[in-house]
Image (tube, rainbow, N blue to C red; front, side, top):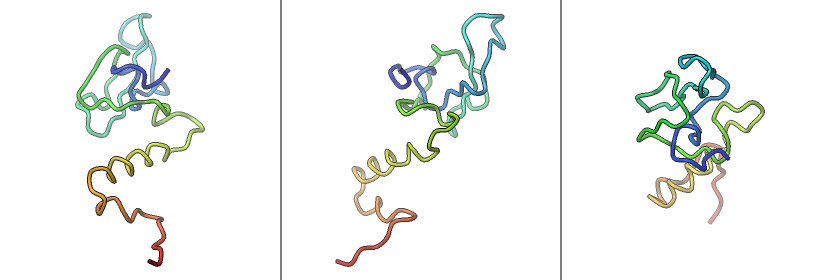
Amino acid sequence: MSGATRNCKGCRYWSEMIAGNIHNNGGEIEAMCLSPISPARGKYMGPQRTCAEWASGHLGAVDEVGSDPLRYEQEKRVVSAKLSPRAAWPFPGDVERDA
């Protein structure tokens, strides 16, 4: 299950869409890291590798075909709201409500 491990295989940025047995001659699959902030961005990583920029892939990879591209946006809102209620609202697309 995606997100169940704290390694590349469980990371939302480990792209199985850009993957293959590229560097290890038929061993484990390696997939490209799509993290916007990881030093591994754009590199092929094995499933057991780890980095400090790991993010749970419990809703699937960020480039998973047919999935909602904004599915992780709600998590950002929840985290932002917990950290700073004033900074968490309004969000783009939110409608101001009358008090």
